[in-house]
Amino acid sequence: MRRKILLTGDRPTGPLHLGHYVGSLKNRIAMQGETDLYVMIADAQAITDNFKDIQKVRTNILEVACDYLAVGLDPEKCHIFIQSCLSELPELTMYFLNLVSIQQIGHNPTVKAECKMRGFDESVPAGFYLYPIFQVADILAFQADIVPVGPDQTPMLELTRDVARKFNDLYKTKLFPTPQGVYPKMEKVLAGFDGQKMSKSLGNAIYLSDPETEVIKKVKKMKSDETRGSIKDPGDPEKAIAFSYLDSFDPDHSFVANLKEKYKEGGLPDSVIKERLIEVLLAFLKPIREKREVFHKDPEAVFSILERGTEKAKEKASQTLAQVKEAMGIRYSFIYK
Image (tube, rainbow, N blue to C red):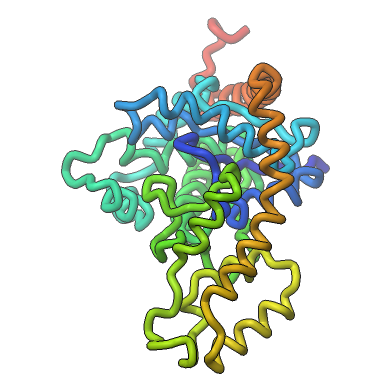
């Protein structure tokens, strides 16, 4: 039996943050030795809402690659590749567009939320509006069995599963597996330090590359339970953002549980919680930042890794495209001999 294929990736619109680590990077690292893992730097997708600043996308390819390598993605165990280098992906998108309705895309809650966040109304670029289909093509190009996703990406996964089934049924093939989602083992998504959804565009994230001074500054800005009038009053740990970070990164779970009980009783200053979080995050980020600096100083080595990964990814996507055209009856013998 072949190893399970896993496809995942990120848009290179900035360096990666702690939300990325908890939401997906941690899972990828754990599964890279058990699966045939393809990790995509989704530059073509990033251009859909950054088409006026493509240099930003280009620059951040290196930043994201350095983040990957620094947290422990091993190029000997996975294939890290650049999306725009695979011409097979837009061709597959063209075929899959015929299996999806405009209504399906319009009702996608993630598309609605992303359009609202970016201030798009009737002027939403078609490329951005259709990006769920590009994601479908990305996943099916590798015939992925597994896709690590966050809760907000469930509609994208369901659309992919729907297209895979439709294609198989329509063209009488078993080419595409129905991909399964792997969700992060966390009760809720990490919020930004301002309490909103953590986002590079909102500038409310703690990045894997942040220096110590920046980490300290951001933790001190974290919102606490604003309903309690003074330190003596009981507090709700659910309303103090620092606790959600401690839940994700503090290895001493009993210590965190004890802090929460004291917070509920009253008398525990928010500064104590934040000081603990600063200690925990600095210890967690230090080795990542040090490794990242080594990679960042040698971009040629990093791009060599990307080149090898892209070659392997293109090989797989090309094979899938040939199988798709064969199933559809458009792999003409006078061209393909």
